[in-house]
Amino acid sequence: MSINPRTLRVTLRALLSAGLIWGLYFLRDNIWFRAYPVVISSFMWGAFLFSLKKGRTPLVEVSARAMRKTLNDAEVRYCYHLTVAWVIFMSIHLGITLFTLISSHAFWALYNGCIAYILIGAMFLAGLLIGKWRHLG
Image 1 (cartoon, rainbow, N blue to C red):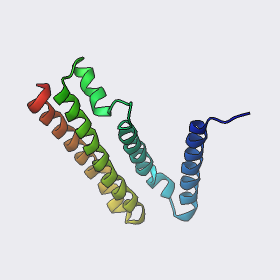
Image 2 (image 1 turned 180 degrees about the vertical axis):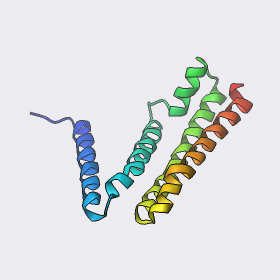
Image 3 (image 1 turned 45 degrees about the vertical axis):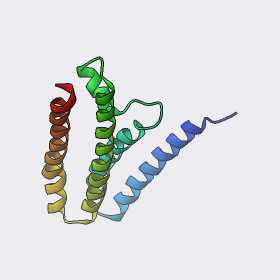
Image 4 (image 1 turned 120 degrees about the vertical axis):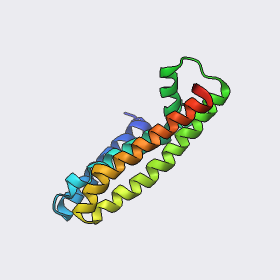
């Protein structure tokens, strides 16, 4: 019986993630709960990153096509570059959420409960407004 390599990779990643979460649970008090933003940020980062693989449609382009069915070449390029910007943004955000695991509970709550939402909202709004101003308006 042959195992599909993609299925094996996905299964190993899921097991590694589950093991990491359980390991964190035993290392610190309530760390498993505090790791939730790291898990969500990791999935978001991965979704943006893997949408840039050859043959896939960048996530921003998927959203743009939901608003307009046809996009010209400049709009498609903009969507690609904005998806790259989201990957960079989510990389930085993921690093900060990882840092909050070892920081104080107050900083964890401030960043993950307020600052992160403001930053993500600002990134989304900037991408939307620039896209409408330059291309999609």
